[in-house]
Image 1 (cartoon, helix red, strand yellow):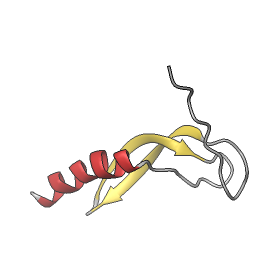
Image 2 (tube, one colour):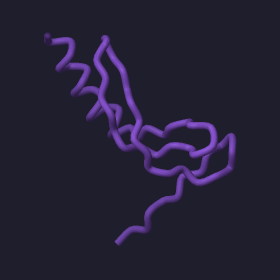
Image 3 (cartoon, rainbow, N blue to C red):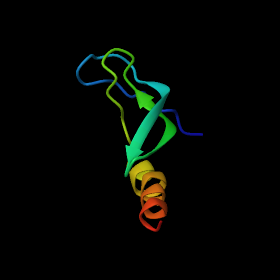
Length: 64
């Protein structure tokens, strides 16, 4: 089993924590659990998240 990789905020040098973040696109919003800095609020989005979940939401909204 692979070890879980610890993500560190480049600005604050603290570990990112999983947190609910609101995203907005074309006047619609959704929430997702993503790594976020507890100090400055910077979020980390994986390529899988961007090309998967966010792309799916984008397609659904643009088809309306």
